[in-house]
Length: 279
Image 1 (tube, rainbow, N blue to C red):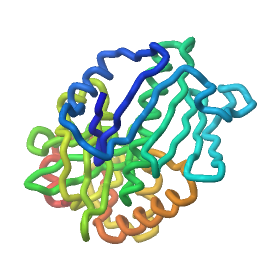
Image 2 (cartoon, rainbow, N blue to C red):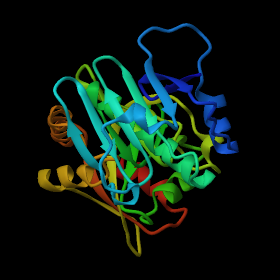
Image 3 (cartoon, one colour):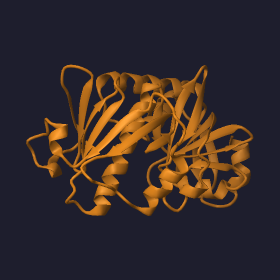
Image 4 (cartoon, rainbow, N blue to C red):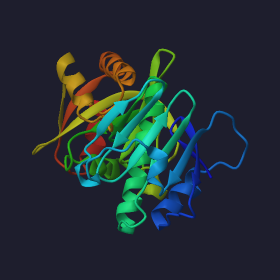
C-alpha cells in the first residue's frame, strides 16, 4: 500500500496476518494512495510481534508516556500507552508494534497516531513542521488558523467555505520552499470533513491565532507571542535532539517571515467580510 501524505510517501506493510479496517481509514487510503511507481518511499511495517521492536521498556504499556531513547546509530524509539515504534530516518524505515488484543478502536487510534508521528518527522526532515490547525486558501494565498481546542478552528473554516477552499481543518504541514513557506494538507482531517478537503498546498500568507471574543478583531503579535503561538500548536513535540533543532529553527523562521496575528473570533458569519480586512 502506498500512501501519499503531505510531502512524502509511505509504503505500509501489515505483517503477522494482521489488518486494520475502518470506514475512516478506507477513506484516507482512497484519497491519498498512489498506484504509480515512485522512488524514495518511507517503508512502514505494522506488526503484532513485540520482539521486532526490542528493546521494549520494562514497565507496563499503560506507563509508557512518550519515552524516547536512542542507541548508537541512526535509530530511535518512541513509546506511549497506545503503541511502540522503532524509526530509522536515514534508511527510511519504521516498525510499529500494536497489541492485537486491544480494543479495535484503540488499535485504529494508535495506528493513526503513529502515522502522524512519522509524517511529523518526515516533514521536519524537510525543514517543516506539522501543526494542529485548520487551513484554507483563496486566489493562491494560504491561511492557517491555530488555537487551543474549542477556539473555533473548524468553525471558522466552515464559515469561510465555499468562498475559501478548505485544505484541512485538523492537521497541516508548513514547509519552507526557497524563500517562502507553503502549507500542505494531510489526510488527517475529521471523518465528517475529510471528503471536503483539498489535498493540495498553497503559499502561506498569514497565520491567525484564534481567541474567542464578543466581536471579530485582529491585532499583530509581538515576536515572542508569534513564536509561542506556533510552538503551542506543534503536533509532535517529542523528538531526537537533531530534529528538535530543526523544529526550533523552523518555528523562529516562520514566526519572523509569515505575518502572525491574534484573531478575536465571535463565531458569526460576519467573519466572511472581516477576514478580508484582517488578511
